[in-house]
Length: 141
Image (cartoon, rainbow, N blue to C red; front, side, top):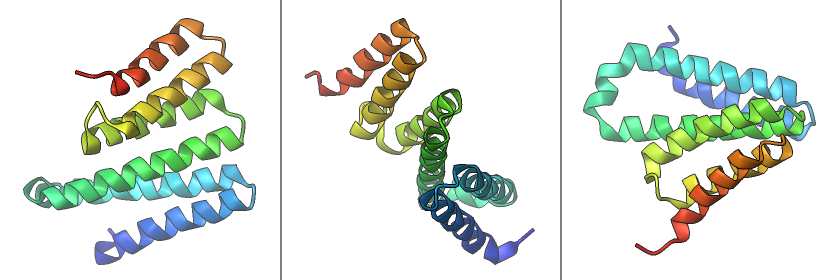
């Protein structure tokens, strides 16, 4: 659809989102992050074969998606939308797991965030479970 300009447009949407978040307008930030993700998904459908053949392209896309979902998490927290924040953090964790492995510091941090959000939402059992999973990163094999 956008051809070679799609990558530039994705970064532009992300940067506009960052600006809106800095201005204290998380709803607008979320809109632009979601536009970037939608464009990435469209681009992946068109260029999917190339990405499967080039692991570097796939890695870059996963990094970008992980960052975008983390930014969406921050927007949701800024807007006091904890349930939405949990969903965005789970997606962040998914991409970080693909990039860094399940037993990575990045994934452990996401699990700690899930624990904190669960606690604030009154889901104590979930909070304990997520914290135990987060701490597993630090356990010796």
